[in-house]
Length: 206
Image (cartoon, rainbow, N blue to C red; front, side, top):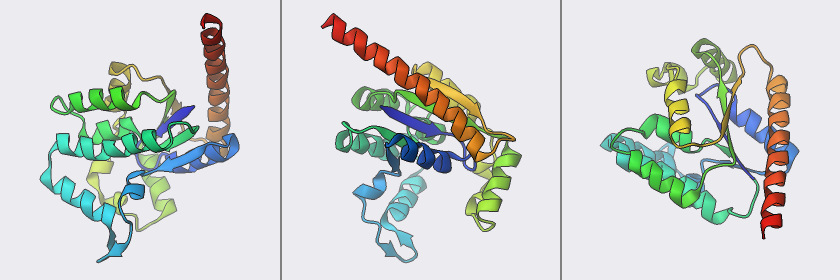
């Protein structure tokens, strides 16, 4: 079972993904490119941060889409037989790097990697997200990054619909982390039942 946790910064992706991974005994995956590139700190940056910075300086959505999509391909190859909770996947990549020029890149990546069994898209307003980021770290650079002060969900949902990726939208506004966790646990329970039923049907066909 492969589940992607998506959403804008400050919505609670990482906290929820780790809680679900622990309770469901699934492998938590975050920034798989860190496993490819040495993370030794050089001049205040690890190698991945330095390389990513150079990629962004070129400002080409095709190059950026392939580069960050490489993490999805790596995860698929290395952990293809594991149950995974993936903290950011296709949706985040497409939000930042998706365009008419790069759309074929995402088609190719989905053909290679396959779609998650479910993408859980967490939602909260800009004001709530910024408040959560501040409470987490008052010095977080995301607070001053105007690119992060956008709603973002229309583009994410359009991508999920266009590429026919199964998803649910979970509103985290005015909910505690535990409330969101319980809601997602119920969603995963339904997914498990659905996958078990599909497997039974497949076995009968064989």
